[in-house]
Structure formats: C-alpha cells, structure tokens
Amino acid sequence: MKLDSRQIEAYIDRAAAGKSASMPADNERGNAREALLPGRIFADLRPVRPLPAAPILLLFCLLPALVVVAAGVKVFGLGGWQSQSVVLRVLLLGPVGIALVAASHNFSRQMIPGSRRLFSAWAVELLAAGVFIGTVAIAFHHKYSIDMAAADEACFRNGVILSAAAIGLALLAARRGVWLDRVASSLQLAALASAAALLVLTLYCPVLTASHVLVAHFGALVVVLLSAWGIGRVVDRLVR
Amino acid sequence: MDERFNSEPLRPIGPGPEPLEHLMRNYQQADRASAEHLFQLLGPLLTRFFLSMPDCRQTADDLTQETLLRIHKARHSYRPSEPVLPWVYAIARHVRVDQYRKQRRTSKHEEAVETEKLEAQAAPQPEAPQDNPDFETLMSYLPESQREVLRMLKVLGMTVEEVARVTSSTAGSVKQKSHRAYEKLRSILSGASGVAKAVHE
Image (cartoon, rainbow over all chains, first blue to last red; front, side, top):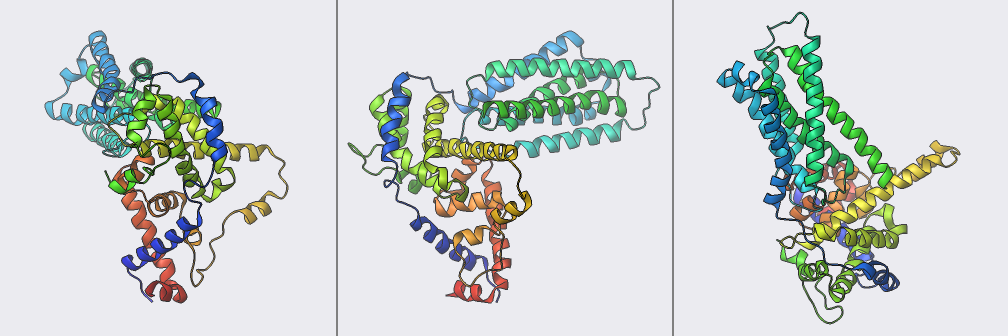
C-alpha cells in the first residue's frame, strides 16, 4: 500500500505524542538536584558582561584577519596584484575574500551557543576554494617553471607564518567566546586565518604558475587546516 | 519566534511566571533569586531533553547537573536579545556529545571480552516493521543526525528554526534532514502492509 508524506508525518506525530506522554512531566523530577545546585553554583555569583551584538562580534573576528592582510601588504608589497589582469583579480581575490567573510561569520557564531546560522559557511568556503583552484588550474596551467623550490618554500613559509599571526590575533579578539564544538571552532579559526594568509600571498606573489600557487599557497592553507584539526582534537580530549 | 516554544516554560513555579529571558538578564547581573528561579524552570526541561534520548536515560539527572554547571560558566555568552532555550539546549546537546565520547573512550580501555558479540547485542538492530511500531522503533531505521532532528521537532516540540540553532546548522539543513527521514520511513513503512493499514486508520 502506497503512503503519502502527510500520512507518514501524521503517523510519526502520533508515535511521538505517545513517546512524549510516556516521559515524566517537567516538574516531576529532580527536587533534590535543585536543592543541591544553588549552593554549589551560586556561591561565587558575580555580574557578567554579555557578549556584544552579532555584527560587532563579526567585526571582532574579521579585524585580526584584516590587520594581517594590511601588515602583509605593507611588508611584501603588491607584486601579484600588479601582474594580474582585472578578470584574474576578480576570480582569485573574490573567492578568497568571500571565504574570509564566511569564516569570520561562522567563527563569530561559534562563540555563542544556539546562535542563528544564516548560511552554511563550509559550503561557501568549499565553493570559494573550488572557484580559486579552478581559476588557477585553467589560467596558469600552461605556465611551467624549471626550479621553483626556493619560491615555493618562501611562499609556503610566509603563508604559515601569516596564518599563525592571524590565529593569535583572532584568539585574542575572541577570548570570551564559549567554544562548545572545539574541533569545528578550531577548523573555522584556521579557515579564517589561512584565508587571510592566502589573500596576502595572492596579492604579493608575482609567480603565476599553477604548481606554485597550488603547492606553496594552497598547500600552506591545507597544512594550517590539518594542524588546526589535530590541535582541536587534542584540546577536545584534554578539556573533556 | 514561535510563541509556543517560548511560552512552554512559563508555568507558575515559585512567586509567579516570568519570561526566561528576563530571568536570564537578571542572572547575568548576579541576582540570586532570579538565578534560582531560572534553574528551577530549566532543570526539569533539561531532564526531559535528556530523557528523550535513549542513550541518556540512565544518566539524565547527572547530565542535567553538568549542563546547569556549564550554563553558569557560560552565562556571559547569552545575548539578551536572543531566546534562552536554544542557547540552553545547544549547551545541553554538547554535554550529551561530550558524555558519549567520554564513555566511548572509557569503554575502549576496558577489557575486551567477546567484543563483537556484545556490540551485536547492544546495537539496535532495525527489524522488519511491526504492525504498529512505536517512536523508538521508527527512529531505529534512521541515521543519528536525522533521529536527533526528528526527536527535537516531534518529541520536544521545537520549531525548525530552534532545532537549527541548537544543532549549529541552518533551517534549510534541518528541513532537508527531516524530509529525508520522512522519505526513508515512508519507503520502509509502505512495504509493511500492517503498518500501512495502521497509518490509514
């Protein structure tokens, strides 16, 4: 016999109502618990300052990344920007900028339990990464280099250093946050920091070859993300 | 915000009904009476939340205590313009996740005696649909992420938006999960003639 969605939903509703009725009423349990807790918890009751509004938190999270980008451009210059066409600038810097804002948004939301997510930050970040890699693979695929080891090493090192600086500043800015999911939070923090680093590398590095950009620039991002995942797991275990 | 969800905990316990948001704001300002009243209201709600998850039934009271302690530590992260319950349930959900992982890690260190046999006994094995399956039997056909969403929507009576807040996802993602769960249950139950008859009734 074929069932339609409305019938199934009504059936599940009935089953859930049965389950709900079988659970004790809200005020039937735990009197002893309520009697014990206040003494334990409220002994050190002090006023606390609530976290600021969501747009301000977003700025708090975005600002460290922007400081790193500004400092990176000041130190390294804009060699990459000058060697790119307008279309390339849009296709390379646009996705990185969008990923940066998405990561900041998600990171700021992670600070507050139960906060509202407007969009899936991971989906936006993956899409941005796809556009970036696609652009590099298509636009720079015909350019080969003979010995890129030195340039690769320098850019990779700078990428990791810039990411580490952004992570440090972002942690300072977001120190009052409550990180429930430590692994997801550390990954999002790494995504934010490595997007800032990738932005600096794309702005300053004039070496427009697919292998260099993917290995040295994007490789730094991958290494930072993997490290953050590992650190997040270790912290999670230690805290639990 | 759905009125039903916010109005549920406003039963007259103690001196009189006060919105949770108001109590929470006073709690942040170190008002002990509001804090105690708030915990009186939240305690039973949290116990009910944990009782709705089969793996937490034995430890529901302990988990409630742990959640209340975490609420106290994280009280500065509540923003006065936001609803209280999604904030509370998000903390409770992570207490449950932490407890589950801790348990799993502890059980790894325990002596492994016929592990496979024990696992086979412990794991809920979806059987063929009975004539009139209860809610837990229906849930046993679904993956954990879909089960969690359906429990919050159907047993705890949350709205899609609230479930999205609690599970740190978007409303679209919650709708998608519940839709997939319905589709899966529909395809399973359509195959069982007794169930189909019960549904039609």
